[in-house]
Amino acid sequence: MSAGTSFAAVMSRRGEIISRALGLDYSRFERGPLAFDYEGMMEKTGYSLEEVRAIQRDVGVGYTPLLELRNITELVRKVSPPGKGARIFVKDEASNPSGSFKARRAALSVYEAQRKGYSGVIAATSGNYGAAVASQACLRGLDCIIVQELFDSRMVGQPEIMEKGRKCEAYGAEVVQLTVGPELFYMMLRLLEETDYFNASLYTPYGIAGIETLGYEVAEQVHERCDRYPDVVVVTHAGGGNLTGTARGLRKAGADDTEVVGASVDLSGLHMASDEDFNRKSFTTGHTGFGVPFATWPDRADVPRNAARALRYMDRYVLLHQGEVFYVTELLAVLEGLERGPAGNTSLAAAFALAQEMDQEEILVVQETEYTGAGKHPTAQLTFARENGVQVRRGDPAENVPGAQIVIPEGPEQIEVRDFSLDRMRKSLIRNAVRHTGVEEVSSPEVDFLCEEINRDRNFVTAALCELQVAVKD
Ligand SMILES: Cc1ncc(COP(=O)(O)O)c(C=O)c1O
Image 1 (cartoon, rainbow, N blue to C red):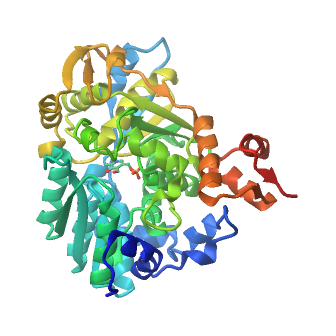
Image 2 (image 1 turned 120 degrees about the vertical axis):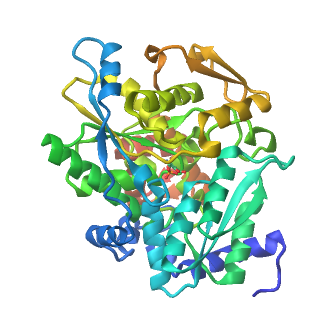
């Protein structure tokens, strides 16, 4: 092990540590200060979709049921204009071994770790992914360490994250629990260096290729049942892997015209790295605190180039209030007999509003559910919110104030989505790309790269660059 363990010393070795812990040389995909070969990087996972499916099938991951939510659809139609109210289906990802779609990412990452001869895996995550990696690691007999950001400085832990920690330990993983702050990445680097384990990052090509099977299955199952592809697929969006992988899988299945809608809980005004705000939110993922920064600067991840690049695939981005998601969580239980966890219910809440814009013969798929239990339940979250000074009441959800008021709708007609401007995010990505690289001019291939990054034409990209006073070389 190297000598220096100060924050600065460890950070200065980050490139070398990450590359050893992945066995992947990202430098060969670089194509200039701004651009890199994204598709080349994805292909270098070395696994075809069929191989990924086989690896997952072998460990009981994937092939989850697609359920039609007939009672919720009926309720949607009651509050829709005549002829409106699409059929809503949900992909029951809670039936994966660790209780969420994250098992798909973990199945491939842990397989790859074993194939490359690592004796253990490490993941820095406070979410379902930790449980997924722990579950796959114990199945394959690998050691597992999960690093969580769990406490504020009073050592009060977020109930949902505590539940995830419990689940990781149940699978035999060692869980390192930290207070909110910059030490998460530092601690992960130190552990990787000390153990020589594999970095089972959420953001490697394996992590994303593992989710492509989800989009593929959605397309396949809807086609089998309805003889057509879904019109809309709604995806709960945070770090961007869920949306990126699902959209890529839909395309691989031929569902090119399906609209991919990202949905997040609106937590604007709360700062994710703030000790004070940390315990004033009731949703630990699927919210704007991750959704916006990751979409507009994907490479803020724990790998040099993030394989989750949501703006390449997102057709629309809609926001919900916390109270609306709590309401829909109960709706799913009492109308469909399905008690499921918060993240999937974010896209279900969006679906409830979006289906009202669509015709009755159209098909909308909510592409995941997640398990629920202990701190993930609305009761635990709402009690915790009250204890932390947040007011909880019934009323008009438009009166929600992140961190101060959770307003639970009085009726289903109050559930609405609010569009978040994709063009605003696209410009923001270009601004971040320029700022992080310090470029003053860009080449024509780099303009092409930016067009792919944000799924927009050259006119849009060159206008945005011009606003930033960046020249385009011929
Ligand atoms: C159940 C569930 N759904 C959705 C998401 C969001 O996925 P992503 O971070 O890849 O956007 C997460 C991530 O934490 C999750 O655990």
